Length: 493
Ligand code: HEM
Image (cartoon, rainbow, N blue to C red; front, side, top):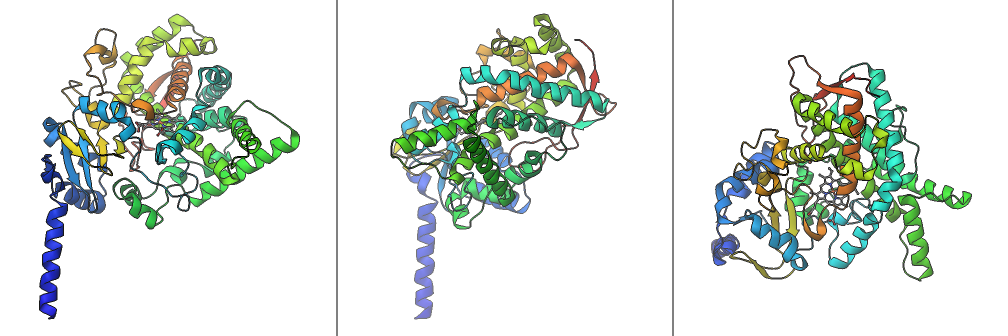
């Protein structure tokens, strides 16, 4: 009897196994049956390699098919390799692909659970996105530019005092983005460069918010439900405590002293007031803290990585830096003359920054969950399928960007930029779910570079003229502390 039971069980397992791994074959979609699952286990889980490299291998092998199916242990997934089909997923068929793959339960990570990035369902996503979008208008940028000048001036003074002592590119950029986020978002006096005890730098830094173990991130992207069942949180409890108490104190202080400031905290306070007047449920204190953390975390980490990479690129390409300095100083030698329009319209700055965004893409892939049965190219996609867009691979594909490892801003010149195929350059994503903060990010990065190149020559920290760009083992591409820079004053103004 026992033998029969084992045989039946074995046959049942084999059948369900071949049924599961036949998902894409039944739909006649080219697929890798075990390869992805095997690579994920052998390289990502055991050797701690980045999931990005595994996607890169699959992309290179199966690019010509336009889409390629693959499997994790629990679900079939699809990689879209044809840029034309990417447009379908991100834009044309958005109503069927409005969710990302990440899921974050409030009980697991209450501060990250209200980030629009993880919102599920069109209504919830719109509600959460509109809160962040309120802080991202042109009117708002014009208001915050004078605050950003002060932060950038603090950075210049800090570097002048350092007298060419090498400093980590990421360390410097992080102090700058922390001060920008706190002063523009929360009305806090900028002090990251002057106060070594700055609480945001201490309690809400990259390690505490953005560096869960690589396994945690793997679970969140590939097996999101399991990640929640296992209660794998991304932000640390320290950061949660700090943020909760900061936002609560801020709201209490402003309410008791009747202080109004034109910033994000004020916006969420007014939003709650409005909800109360309309007899709708208001956001709890923890939820208000979560909205603040969304703005803070998203605007400090990605922007500081991207700024750090850009400064390293400029240090390694003095010809580009010289040309950039010439173009900027031909407009004005004084950084505070650069209003919003001027900051955004320096052509060579935009070309060089685009090239840096291409080379050091932050979100290496975009993800969507299909919410209604549909067809992409020739691939029938049932509801629930997770779809990935490999933007990091597009950015390094020689077909779209010849000699892809070369830092060459000319790719984005007026004459050349139209030869870049549509949907192959997507550093901020595309469609209705495009990064809500991309204009803020570009503004703060451009402004930092204007202040820096007008005041300093940005140099590699070593004598041989090249700074090695070493990557940390972090979910987002991040320059390691060993990638340093020196700033030689040039007294231009
Ligand atoms: C250079 C810096 C930045 C880069 C490279 C970047 C990149 C991205 C990417 C690739 C996405 C995913 C888009 C998609 O799924 O189609 C995204 C989403 C998002 N970003 Fe950024 N980002 C940056 C800065 C910022 C800033 C400053 C904020 C400020 C609040 C921000 C807030 C967000 C939010 C809230 C989302 C989710 C949007 C949604 O799902 O509707 N990001 N970002």
